Image (cartoon, rainbow, N blue to C red; front, side, top):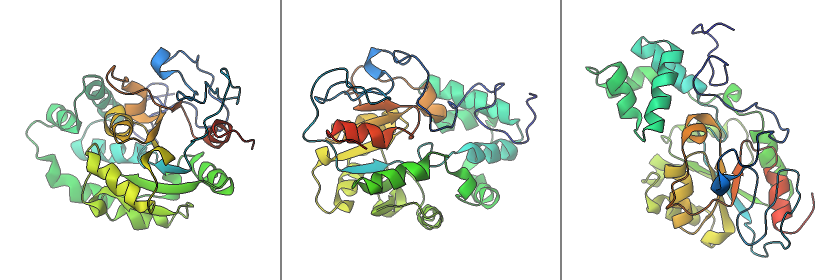
Length: 281
């Protein structure tokens, strides 16, 4: 397959950054792929080790399993391929080039500013935000990960509460709501007045639940710096979803509490949570 700039996605074989296959099947990577502290598909709290096929490797279940699942948005529910494709077009570089520079910045622990500084050092990229929004056009059905809707529907049918909250402008709420994903509460960081990794973001998320304790929430996110580490520090249970640029390339710092779950997709989340709380699907 050629690396043309049309129909670009992270999953293309010629791209530096790749998504795992977007299916609902259990992942096939070795469980030690991410290291012992981030083995794929396991519950790391007192409930024992639960693999993606539902096998409990250590006895016991957690009597205090989460009852509410909070979903980040970008690269958890929404595939952000189009976001980066539009930025590449605006900067006049190929999609592959943008992907490569973004990947290098992530590996080096740098933010998006470093990407723009490298690709367009004399450009105030913020001046292009309005044009980017015009071309991007907001969330569409095609941007949903194939496993997102099914996962939320399964969790609702099992009695879990669903909250959707991430670092997004306020206008994304209506766009996401129009896609009809089941949820009990939804808020964008701009609406909350605070963004991750600020601990206050997770305080606001707790308010959305109407009084849940932190340990009753499982936060599902793709980034260790914005999601896993600050959510754990706030007392929430955590699920590290290893897809998208950050999910694929970031490591779990030694100082970060081990996530409760490490997954490569949402297809098995409902089964794992049911096993975690000692039930069957």
